Image: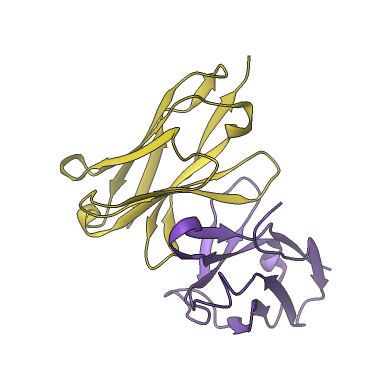
Length: 111
Length: 117
């Protein structure tokens, strides 16, 4: 069982927007602005899409955005495209004992 | 261009040991925290360990603490993961990654470790 909770799957049609939630606790997401999101295609390494809740690395499309409210972080993908179909993982700092926690991952299907 | 190449994986019996290596190039290795992250077959990502630039700090995930040791050689631009007392549940693809403020910026292609009798 993962420390952060994500929906197992989400789906959307091309052009639509979808949001993936990531729920933690006051010991991780709720206490630190150190949430990151990763995109992973089957058989490939993950790719950083969002860091520090809302920031995008250079080269990542502005269709990807992040936010946080309380103990829940969210990744929103607007203008869905076929190649957005992948697994998405959230990650958060969790303090000096546990350090880093991941979500269980969400499979995004573009219909 | 950042390049990270993991080697050293393979099949090992339960209770055995293995050392993974990660060769880094294309960036100033000694300036970066580095991490290992793993992914069991069909499962999600799990943080394993990370290490500060000068090796003065290392941190471990709860499932590997006391069994795994992360180290680095800045002169060789290399990161290592020494794995002892391996268990079946350590079977996974192991990735090395450059590490910012609790984020994993660049990843290697991963290396498979299989623990089985």
